[in-house]
Image (cartoon, rainbow, N blue to C red; front, side):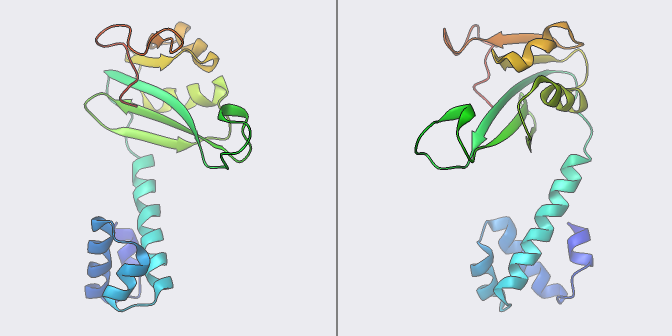
Length: 168
């Protein structure tokens, strides 16, 4: 977050106020009123903070060896008509959850096997246990460097005490 503050022309005390409001979850428009700056200034400052956070998270090392839950979902679009994978205006989001640890999410162009396994190989170290649902895109994990465990949601949501993706 130092990068966003260093490039700003705002006085240090105003930056500090906006940073406190950002951490507290205050909307940019309200933070602008409280810090006595233009709403566009606060919005831009918040945007720069988010970009800095995203850049630092993207540069982090992969998850250490352990248990990782993996799942994809769709967000956005209108609710009318078709739902799920084929619905218009939906954006696929892919997430990884290190059990008792960190979460990584990314907007992805599609949910094909090449796209998902590329992110998995980038973010998870080999010999980790990877828990997924029974989506076809994860079939390649059966013959990969990971220990792959599946949950078939048509039959059950938890196959044993450890085999589930309910955290994700």
